[in-house]
Amino acid sequence: MYAVDYSNYLQHHGILGMKWGIRRYQNADGSLTSAGKRRYNENYNPDQIRRDIAVYGKRGAKRISKDMDRGIPISGARSLEARRYHKAEEASNTGRKVGKVVGALGGAALGIAAVYGLTQTAKGRSICSNIVNKFSSGSSMAQKMQRYQNVQEFLRSPRGMGMVAVGAGIVGTFIGKAVGKNAPLAAKGYTSLARHDMKVGYTEKTTRDERDKKADKAMQKMGY
Image (cartoon, rainbow, N blue to C red):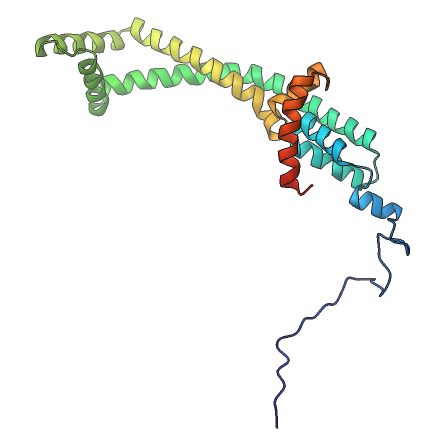
């Protein structure tokens, strides 16, 4: 007598409401229903996708595609994405101002902390000594020691600490400004090219060709 093993078989239950021979998104002749067109975005052709990737970035094109899935026409979906961009741009302008102030204060604080570390801690003094020795090659030990003491005195003085704090604050201003400006746009996936395009329009041929090349690569990754 043979035992039958039923462990290796394929089981398919379908989905709720499924009927054999009836497809949700296709008519009997194979054409897409209105729901199918929304589902597969038949009206969202590769040229339009390429243009939207170039203008709004890959994530922007995906958002447009999702809006079209909900039945919104491409013109409306693009308008919604343009609104998202302008909101991100407003946040970018605010972020640039806030980042400028925060960066300046943070840079100054880090500068003061660095001065404290170089003058008040053993490791910091050792680092300071190594830097002085590196820029004093060929000098005698006495000269190196004198320069090290001069540097330490300068850093401890209010003038030296102030100069370091101001310098670090200026550097922090530029960093904070850049981060605050780009973070809201980058969070939505808007590239620098997309930001440029929103200002000058999708018209400049050289810039458009460059964007189209990047858009083609993005489309390949998206499976188009």
